Length: 240
Length: 281
Image (cartoon, rainbow over all chains, first blue to last red):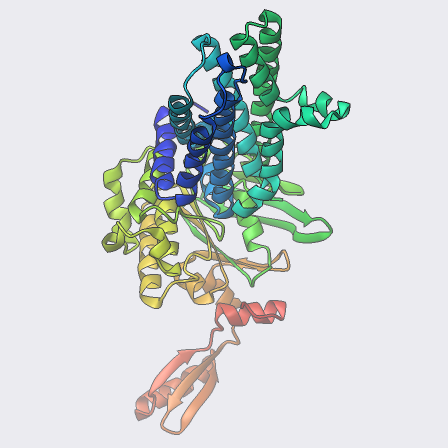
């Protein structure tokens, strides 16, 4: 099957027209921006603070807009049987999944940019920052797509997806306080933990070892989450 | 004639329930083939297998000479059109935007939509949001989407189930025109009038098995009781399709008493009940 940019853009264009008429998506896109405003008053690094006020809104934007909105859009397509229509059209899985992800990516990047304008960007290597953000975005969008494909309805997306996404976002922040070794062992594998650790290593100049460890973790998650999406999508082409 | 769909000993099990039991049939290129049966008889299951939405348990199925479950390529999907009960539409988009998306997916010029919208009587509603359409109008949008790329085979699962008589006639005319232009149509329905009006051949499906397969005319002739009803001023009179019947018709014509004459072939619905012991609803 040959890749068609026209088909990909057709699906992305449909997503744009559909999403601007969907208040649920617009509301969710606003949440990380509100959080950024609330976190703006936190102590800066120079005042002994952490970089949470910078990374938190980014992680919330990626999880809420990149993952949860993606999950909602996919599960709505499944619930209304439009995903099957796309699957039975000449569009390939890559065209459908990339087309459906294009608008979510644009929304997430815009929301993150607004968040960074509000919180400010600490002194950090921008190349690494962009790389970390893009990898985490791909991972979360793949997780969101998988959650959307697994959920039978849009409302079921919350039941399936929220616990997973909350664990991924808030686990690295609150789990250390629990002081439970097993939980910390699990947290040590998840990509959001390595996103925060990697950025901390960059900002606080903790050395390259942590940086490469975190980047390696994100790369492994990227590959695994993409494989997961295509496996689940392939399975959904057929009725049970 | 060339077979475009070939099904040989097809069986489908849903856990312990057998939905299809060794179905065998061929659909010839250019014909309108009807699958007639009540709800739950296996019609939709067959369409889903033929359109690569469902895997089958055993048997052999080919469409265009290849197995549908192995042919997910654009070259195959671009050659078929599908209208089933699970064909969804984008509620927040207009009729036109819904169809434009699929024009671009199939590589069809947008200007060809004018003819398609006319064919399904939706030109005036092109800018209406789908969420504001009636069930029948949504059905017509779905049909428009199924035919906009002029498929070689059109799979239709109860295509007029939600439509009023005027729109049914228009859709039937559209389907006949597509068929005249070369589209093979695989139609499932429980509406015997629709099958009689459209189909070159019909198969009766009951409990996952084909109980009869022939042209509507042949089925009526095979299962008719070879009698004719003559309407006279004294009431209806039934005669046989034989020499005695011919003499009686001749007498009534000569005496000017013959008011109407009807051959007593059964409807497809009557034949279905006779063969399966159950109705089509």
